[in-house]
Length: 502
RNA sequence: GCGGGCGUAGUUCAAUGGUAGAACGGCAGCCUUCCAAGCUGCAUAUGCCGGUUCGAUCCCGGUCGCCCGCUCCA
Image (tube, rainbow, N blue to C red; front, side, top):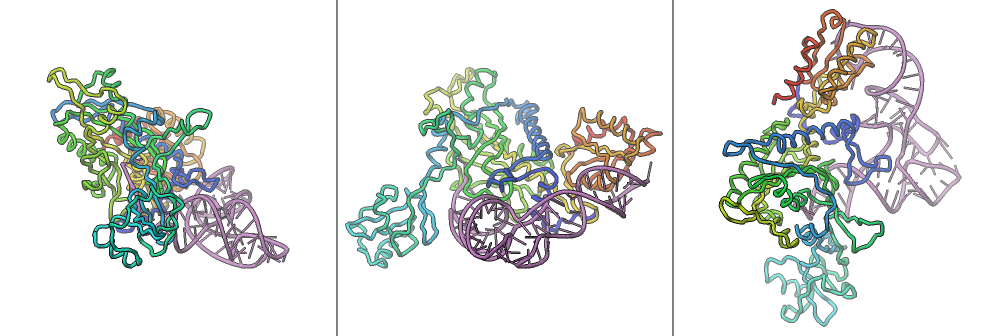
C-alpha cells in the first residue's frame, strides 16, 4: 500500500467526491446554486452529527477533569437564532460592523466612508485623503493637484458628511481625476429578517452571527435554575449566519454555518489558568477525532488583529489543502473578559453580577470562549481523511476515525445467492440497533469494497459459505485491506472496541 | 465588491455554426466463494435568459455558479 503523502491533494477532487458520494451538495443545485450556501447529503449529515455528538459529549455529558482534579461543570443550551435586536446592539455586532464603504471607479480601491477625509474649500476641486501616515504627504499631493498647499485653508470633512451633489468635486486618494468615487454603501455582516407578517423597517431583526450571545443573555437564568456557580460553562451548538464578503473554499467560508461554542465563566483572577486549560483541552479533542497533530497549529493572535471584545485569542488552525503551506482557522479560544456581560448589563439594565456568598463579593465573571466551527470541522475531517492510494481500485479512500465515520461497517453477503443474504440481513438488523451500518447485496464484492472505501467505512463484514457452517465472517479492514475471520457473536464487541480507540 | 480564467451526463474528459461521444460511476439482469472481473441491456449532459443566424452547445450580451489573485473576514 502506498499512501502518497508527497502528492498534493486537490480540493477539486475532494469537492467532486463529496458530491459523488452524498456528503455535501451545492445548495439549490438545480437552480444553478447559491453562493455561500451548501447542503449536507445523507453521509455528510451523519459525519456532522458524529462530530457534533462527540463535542457535546466531551463538553456537557463527560466534561474534562479540571486542574484541581475534579470534573468541571458545563450545562447545555439551545437558544433562538433570532433574538431581540438590542442583543446585537449591545454585543457591538450591529453598530461596529455596519460601516459605509466608498469605492473608487478608477483605482478600484475601497475606503471606509467615515475614514475618508475630504479637504473642502470654496473651489470645486476637493482632494480626499485616506490613512495618511506622513503629514508632509498632504501638501505634496495638493501641490501635484495644483491646489493650495496650505492645509489651514481647507475645512476637513469626512466623506459620509458630504452632500451627494458635491461628489463630482472630489478627487479620490488614489486617482488624479475628480468624480470617481461612488456614494457610500452599507456593508453589513449581519443578515436581516423581518418577523411579523407585515414587512416594516421598524421590525428589522437579525439572524445571529454567533451562538455566544444566546449564552450570555441566558447566563442569569442558568445560574438561577441549574445550581451552577463560577467556574462553570454553558455549551451550545447551532447555526449562525454572516454576510461574508467573499464566500470561498467550499464550505470553509459560507454565509450559513454551524458553531459549537462554550462560554466558560470564571472568577476574574483565574482567567489565565482557564485560558491555558481550554486551549490544551480543545487541541486534544481535535486530535481525538482523528486530526493529525502535525497539521494543527496554535496561532496566538496579535493584539492589533483581535476582535473588539477579545483580550487574547488563540486560534486552533489546520492545514487545509487550500491553506497549504499555511493554516486556516478551525476553532478560536478567546478571552472575552467581562466585555459581553458588562455590555448586556448596561444595555438591558439587568444586574448580571454573580454574588459569591463564601467570599462575600460581587463580580462579573470573566469568560473564556472555545468556539469551534462544526462546518469547518467536517471539512477538516474530510480533508484529513482523504487518502490517495493508487494501489486500490477506488484510487482513494477516506481514512476517518471509526468514531467519526458515517457508516461504521458494511455487511456484505459474498454472493446474492439465497443462503448468504438471510444471514447478512439478520446481522445487519442486529448491528443497526447500536451502529450506523450498511447492508449491500448487489454487485460484485470488489465493487462494494471500493464503494465503502470511498465513503470511509472502516470495516466490512463478509458472509460466505464458511459462515453457514461455523458462524464466522471475514472482517476486511479499510486502511490495510487485510482480512481476518471473526465469529459473528464477537462483531458488536469488536466494533465497540474500535469506536473507542484513538 | 474588483480583475482574470472557466461552465458539455453523477464524475473526468471529447466533439461540432447543421442537432453531442467515451471512460468510470449508476440501474436492471446473468455470472461470480473476496477487491471496481466478464457479458447483455437501460437511463442520464451543452448552467440560465436573451441577441445574431435558415439553424447556436459553439459567436455576442446579460445573469448565475465555480476556480485564482485582490479586498474583506466580530
